[in-house]
Every structure is written in structure tokens, then in C-alpha cells.
Image (cartoon, rainbow, N blue to C red; front, side, top):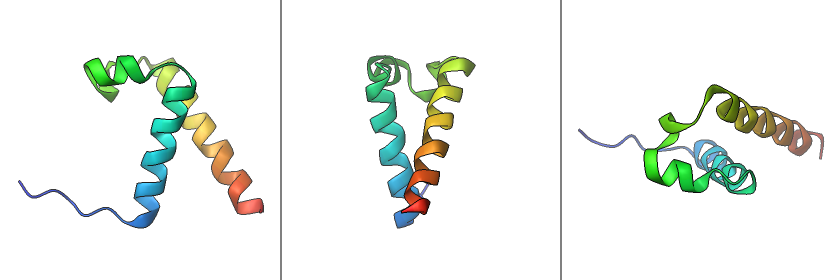
Length: 60
């Protein structure tokens, strides 16, 4: 199956997701089991911080 080409916006969001996971100390877990290995609480924390940062960027 061909991989979908990502837009610059999708690439920025994915990069941010990895950065936040790293900051929260979750990258080892993600590397071992993928994003699906995270709990709902961990995923929600990443999503919440992504939303917060995106709002901050839009204000600038």
C-alpha cells in the first residue's frame, strides 16, 4: 500500500507530538509498542499539550 504524502502542517503536528512524548518521558514506551501502547491518560496529555501549543503559536 502506498504511503500517504503528508502536508507541511501534518509534518509539524507529528514533530510536535514526538517532542511532547519525549518531554513527558514516553518515547521509550512509544518506540517499544507504538502509539497504541499509550494509555488514554497519556494520549490525552499529549493531545492537550499539542492543542495548548498550537493556540500559543496562533497568538504570535
